[in-house]
Length: 366
Image (cartoon, rainbow, N blue to C red; front, side, top):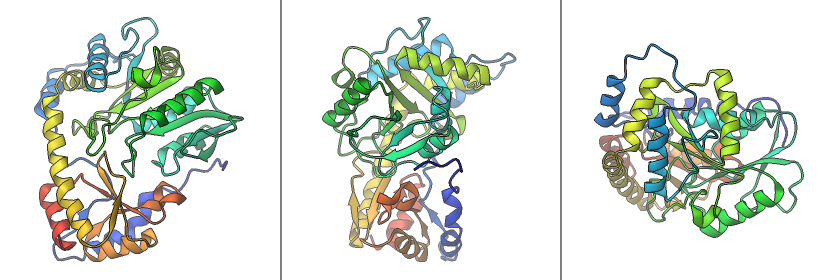
């Protein structure tokens, strides 16, 4: 599919379901958007406040302290060893959250004007938006295509949004081989990498996948979910220094700069695993409560082995399920938002308070 018109903003179409859910006497339980609701940990807020005197422009490259902390975090948590993060060709840079990067990456890599971006069959909508903004087409597939003609970029997403699917090592290695043989960059969105439940996510940049170097490979990470810091807009791009450098050079021309206090907060957060584990435990407890209630209705949960969502089906059109949920005062996200293959599923987010998750479970009969 090739189009130069942006798709409709999908969440606008939920207005009717939200209005119906609002009539429930217990109020709305909004599980449609994965927006964190818990307090941002003190390790971030204190570092942000301490760096509040920031009269000069921040660096698009990221402070040496941040790049060092990011490289150490990737090694410690994901087993990824970067090329020299402080070298002349950077292997990691901060980004203004991950959604901005996803939407702009084809443009930042200079891929405008022709070709196709490969995205998963069921995919976060912004991958398509980024292709459209660059004047590129979109092809949905979950395995390397037999014909690489015209493909200029591949997006992987593991753990996946919306369905929480984790790609196996063999699947990841197949994409690496295909990308390198075809001369096509392969980029993995790994924003939920620390939230494995029934499977342990592996980074595309891990040596068991990438080999001895990261040629042709990039990975995207975010502090939004693991550090409950979506309002900070704090993300990372890492991998092949040649590709990271290309992105960095364009970003500094555009003034896409992560504010200095946010860079200080990122540095502190990436050095502290304790707050990540506390938040992970919260999400794990909410997941158990909600999953038990969903299954009690007879609905099935598919994939969902990692990440912050339950991928639910009642074997009916997703909008029928959305209407059923709205009658219970619950708002979910229809699977059709994520591509035609999601048309019989809904996504339920775990990013609601304990009280709201308990309310949803009670309404579902759990």
